[in-house]
Amino acid sequence: MRTQVAIIGAGPAGLLLAHLLHLDGIESVVIEARSQHYAENRIRAGVLEHHVVDVLDQTGLGARMHREGLRHEGTGLLFGGKLHRIDFQALVGQSVMVYGQHEVVRDLIAARQAAGAPLLFECADVLVSGFQGGSPEVRFTQGGQAHTLHCDVIAGCDGFHGVCRPALPPGSWRGYDRVYPFGWLGILADAPPSAEELIYANHERGFALCSQRSPTVQRLYLQCAPDEEVEAWSDDRIWSELGTRLACDGFQLRTGRIFQKGVTPMRSYVAEPMQCGRLFLAGDAAHIVPPTGAKGMNSAVADVLLLSRAIGRWYGSGDDAGLEGYSAAALRRIWKVQRFSWWMTTLFHRFDGASDFDRRVQLAELDYVVGSREASAALAENYVGLPLT
Ligand code: RFL
Ligand code: PHB
View 1 (cartoon, rainbow, N blue to C red):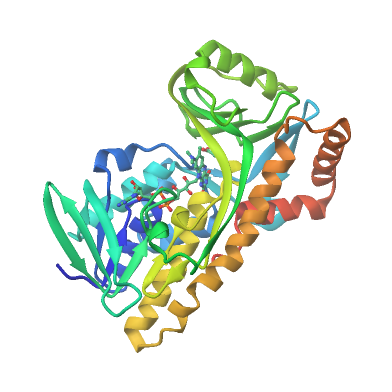
View 2 (cartoon, rainbow, N blue to C red):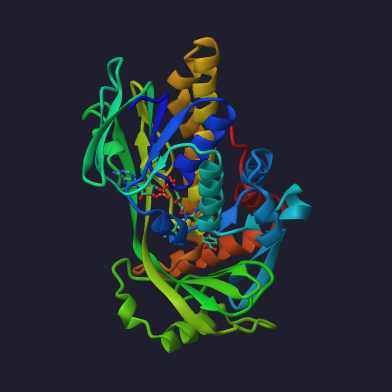
């Protein structure tokens, strides 16, 4: 088998890269470890930056998102029992779209399959090699049969636990890491939204987030221990804790049947550089953020936009400056996104062992953010999305 670009992983990064290359007339094969059903039903991110909405629009993927997604022109910040609004539209003239990551993935898979382009699910034993010399290749098995895919470029879009980052030669890269001493318990519930916009809550018992997915489904999160047992959280306990942490004037928590529960540990991580020879990492394979800034999937989109342009330039004119400069260009944005995600996390979470002084400084910072137009605008500018490239 031979292709131009071998893409490992059918998450948002891999699927969007395949789509962008296809529009540019460049062939690729997407190799995914899991099943199509799994990829289409994995519940994760929910907020799309305005540039990401534009990319989906401009590449023919926006129709369902505009029908079913929820446009948000601001967000709520709750602390000291009072709800404040950050008005994105008034402050920076932009908004975000609440549309589940798995819906984006479904739209991308449908486009790929409609184009009749190769997207291989349930591949095992994936191994990338040859990327430092002139003949990159990917070995894998599918349905018990061994395959070798020869290519010009390998895109490692296989997420944080994939095989591509560990395939970078030792000594050629390093990881920068911060692990937070808490996680998020996330739920999906059959209930109409409790609020028109998201609410990020700083409460002395810990962070809470009130988000949504549709007019009938809510997405909510609670700060918990990083290794929290989901079983320890009955539906009643979850609703009661959410009610406590989100309590404020005029807010009424709408409850309903909880049909999904999961715990996510929180971590910031960046691999530098994000490339070696003809192997390029994109999305969670190269970096992850704590979800407080809603940046993970958005960063994956930013990476593959850069990478697809660099690959297009290389095939178009033989100029490999974009490929050579890919990691440096991607990292400039990533570190700003890391900073914002770390800052939001630090601002809103309860840190065990924090002193009363620390707690007062945290509340003062929140008060400053909602009270200063400049500080509110800085939050809004980062939240709706820094320029993609
Ligand atoms: P993914 O989505 O992890 O996809 C990687 C794909 O690679 C496959 N794979 C392999 N395939 C072949 N061979 C192998 N050896 C392989 N190993 C792995 C995997 O099966 C998978 O299909 O990475 P990608 O594409 O880089 O996308 C990143 C995003 O998924 C992630 O950053 C976001 O979900 C993070 N995130 C959020 N991001 C946002 O932009 N906005 C949000 O509101 C937001 N909220 C969140 C989040 C992540 C969360 N969790 C659960 C981590 C909320 C949560 C709770
Ligand atoms: C979500 O709706 O899943 C969501 C929203 C905002 C975040 C994280 C997750 O910061």
